Amino acid sequence: MAAANIGLPAHLVAVCFACTHNPSNQSKDHTANQAVFNIVKEKIMSPAIDLPPSDLMQESERIKNELLKVEVEVTRAATAARSVQMSGLREKLGYDKVNTVDAAYIVDSRIMKKTPVITPEALADILRTTEKSAKTTEQSRKRIIDILAKKDDRLIVIVGPCSIHDPTSALEYAEKVKQWRDKYGSDLEIIMRAYMEKPRTEKDWKGLVYDPLLDGSEDINLGLVLTRLLSGRITNLGVPIAMERLNALTPQYLNGLVAYDAIGARNTTDQKSREYASGTSSPVGFKNTPEGSLLSAVQAVRSAQSEHAFLGMSTDGVISQINTTGNETGHVILRGGQDGPNYSAEHVAQLKQLLNKYGLQESIIIDASHGNSGKQADKQIEVIKDVSRQVAGGETAIVGVMVESNLVAGAQKQKNADGKFKPASELIYGQSITDECAGLDDTDEMLAMLAEAAARRRKTEN
Image 1 (cartoon, rainbow, N blue to C red):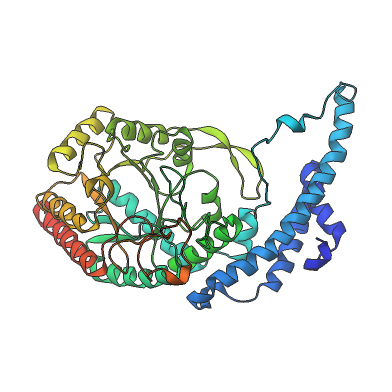
Image 2 (cartoon, rainbow, N blue to C red; image 1 turned 60 degrees about the vertical axis):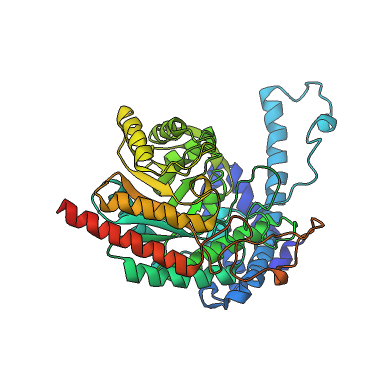
């Protein structure tokens, strides 16, 4: 693939990445890289904010293709430059005459292929954060932090689809969240659940990031572009978003767009998740484990409060040592366990006791779905009724809830009986393809309960 395909001289591409490996050339690095991306930006003229929702997939494909041309060329140039310099370095260090063998036969024996991936920096340079999106994220983060610290007596409500699989219906749902924020804003800080990565117990659809075409093609580059584009659209509406984090790599592609991070039940005990949480710019919650362990979640919060050093990726795609400051916003999310729900007053009191034992703030979010509802969407309302009674009765440890909700109640199968993916056109618009979700009417009813409960607690405290 020639550099001329993107209108960039091959020598400029080579200079751009040769300087990465030569400290004396660092001053050239920014100029060369900027030249690459300026050319790409000129080719991508359609403003993503103004595109019809139905065109977002096509636009994501267009951006992906242009950025991958750059990535292929710069990777090739970097590899060539590194090979030359390493050859001389081996000689300098005295390792040029060591007898070696070609170890290809014992390396990557189960890897089918490797595909270049767009860097977070390159994608953000094309799909830049708008002023409104940045303000949406900043303000919501501050409100969440104030609620966790008991400086704001509202409730955090993270509401939205179990997973987003369709940009058009996601944006329609975001418009509804915007209306709810206006309606209930004095009592609730409502954040849209915009989960585009899904942890799976076994092999299944892992979310929009990994399989945006819903057909098993697993075009991660396309998923990364679409996820950033869609997140930018939602936040530009004035609707903050929450996401579940599965690793420390994909969040780099959404820097500045996510107001709240959740670490799921399967990952709470994972060291990598705890390390990530210690450095995220967002408030972060840890769910109790699938078995129901509260101690694991409390330990995760403590770990995330500490400084960590680990291997990660910088925004320009370079493997880097990451050193974090620790995150004081960590808290526990009760989501039920193998023994049943854990949202009752007794369960809340048990967690409060554990938090006090470990010197942590009594700030608890309750997930109305998953183990607390047996993954039955219509039972979420019973959870919210109970939680609302606790809040109205003056329970200050409960600072928020999570609700799985969509345009259409219930859930649908993504695959036919023969195990093959259904064409996207055959899926019911606005209905989940993962866990069951509540419909709009039930969601509005739950939000009304929570708003009234927060208002009553405020009167009790005053």
